[in-house]
Amino acid sequence: MPSDRPLPSSSSATTVLSVSALNQAVSRMLERSFPLSWISGEISNFTRAASGHWYFTLKDDAAQVRAVMFRGRAQYADFMPREGDKVEVRALVTLYAPRGDYQLSVEAIRRAGVGNLYEAFLQLKEKLAAEGLFDPDRKRPLPAFVRTIGIVTSPQAAALRDILTTLKRRAPHVRVILYPTPVQGEGSAMKIAQAIATASARAECDVLLVCRGGGSIEDLWSFNHELVARTIVGCDMPVIVGVGHETDFTIADFAADLRAPTPTAAAELATLPRADWLSQLNTQAEDMRRAMKRQLSDTAQTLDWLSRRLISPAAYIAHERMKLQALQTRLGHATRIPLSKAQFALAHLRNRWLTQLPDTRVQRSNVANHARRLTNQMNTRIATQRQNLHALSAQLEMLNPQRTLERGYAIVTNEKGEIVRAPQELHPRQNVTIKLAEGSAQIGIATVQQTLD
Image 1 (cartoon, rainbow, N blue to C red):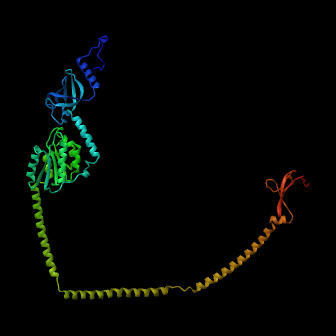
Image 2: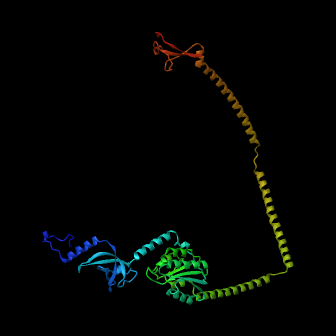
Image 3: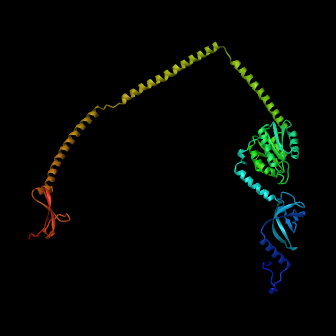
């Protein structure tokens, strides 16, 4: 493995690098020191190898550098460089080790100045998209049958000849109105917008084509103008935009109701071929003839069937009267028979009920006797219980402490409210409460005497 260390100084002359190691070290140093960058210059000595790789020299007035763009990257370029083209390349600075040549490894290429234009294109696209100008729900469908087509383009443009040739071949019955305008150059965007506004104001056509042939991004830049996009959106009829080639996209394409890859495709999208219309009309005419014949046949059969059913009004009334009498008879039978059956069943059920009805007179007499006996027993029991209650009440009254107090006795309680029953529970200078029959009094104990057994 070659070392990434710097070249040895004179003090370490024993370290010797090979040429390969030196070139690889320099190559790595270049790749680390110079990031991927955009570089502008003029194409010189351009060569496209059989492998698909591009080799060229990028130069300016004072210097030049070799460059290579490998096939995997070159296939995405949107143009083939030529001698003298002013370009901008996005490249990495490298070293071709076998020859020791310093070169650029190109990742992308564009025409000089295209970067700024493309940046402006993206900014305008994002702005108009945010306003809803490109919303699919806003776009209008094309009419099914177009009688007049308006074309906004240059009278000298090859695109106009392609459109007229296509319309003459596909739909010679369609009328064409040209709204002439320059399609490139200074002030062309304003004139394109004016032509579209004129077509919208006159309302002479069913569909408006805004077209021009292919070209560089600078040639197509008039169709990337904000005024053109807003005028297309504000147009009163559907607008088809066919600008450049299939790979070319402009702001006008996004604002249009329908985008066509080329002017010729725009003419094809705007019209259905005359042969298709005639074929469709012939098919519909044949369907109408068959439908008319089928309708006439069905009507004739219906008329024959109705004529066979047609009878005189008098006979029809007599026939209906007989039907009415028959229905009346059937109705009478239908009502009498169920009623007779129901009456017979009711009588049969009444007889069965009378035979099954039990004699409850004896049971009623027994119930009345039991009721009288129960009443007498309850009255006797209540009288006995009332006497017992009076006796117990008298005994309770005798044991009532209030009655004892009324006889002159008193109840002595200490400071805690406890009843004093013995002299041992008292001591001199103690306050006690004496409860009498009609109140209470607090007294102090002077002395305590105990009764000796």
